[in-house]
Length: 247
Length: 235
Image (cartoon, rainbow over the protein chains, first blue to last red):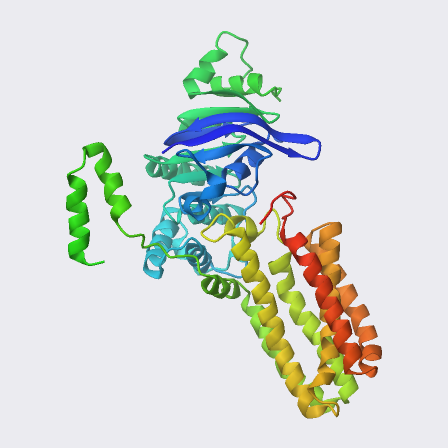
């Protein structure tokens, strides 16, 4: 399985959010790093076919995802940066609803919902309305919905937002278990999340991919240059490539 | 497909080279995934409404029985018109004003296409309107001297609200708050004119309602063509 991003460009008015991006994603965990406004969310929306590119295409095994439609969406798990939910539904009903939307039959939906609620540690509170959930709990429900259809391509936009350290560890373990023959793309500006999870890192700045490579490759590419106090090698590389100044 | 046929497919695929046998097996097995049916999506959309919404519909429907008995036909028509506008207002936000941070973004990445979702949402909207109008028209048939036709004017505030909210969303903000405020303001304005139009007979009522309905239909495709986060998206 190969997801190819070919010369992808998206403009909003005068602002070019994503500019001539070329990537090749094969099974593995990818960390998409970039400062706010770098174009991460726009790139992700292009990858999940929510946006149509002005130029270029996203291809799955050579087929344009826009032409694949349902065939592509069936293989996709997606967590938006600001994920929606129906506050009057319980976590269990919300996941069953999402499972039905993803085309799972009732038995499968019930089984997957139960397993995922246990995985994200919300099984005991599955009957509570989502309106009563904290931000971290909602984020865990949203992560669970992304995994419902056992997707081959999992795209998560800021997945660890609102998670406490323990939940973050749980999330990392979950991603580690879930990876394998899947393409997982984590978009974040929290470098440590990527440092520990990603096989490959994609650095994005002002809509351009400024660097790709493994954590080691990217970290070593700035070796020998002045290191900011208290930053890890990847953070140092991020600050250099993405033009961020250490606070 | 029988068990025998499945076994023969698996046996057949084992004959293939190891790197191809899984692909061959998967290609030959039938696709048992659920196909996207609009009817099923419609049921899912209706399931996603809050229980409070359905309770509200039942309460308003029950109240209609009382208002037609307690008020004069003119007053009852005006009150029923406002009820129908309020009932439309409840799902309007969920069905129409979708953008970043709403369920629409998640729903669109599932099995059903954006076009199918929008079709189901529009059908939900009309289904609810028809149920609500059905009650009003039945009551008017019993209690109004002019018969069920008198109830045509009760559609005007709801139609005014919908047309104005769509206009606002299309040209201005496309945000839920301003859309709903516009809906309420236009529905109230519509209820003011409803009395005058009702007095001019069934033809005037019908023409007004039809004109508003056409106004909605004209604006609908443009509105549906985009979301708050993607002005360039086409169905």
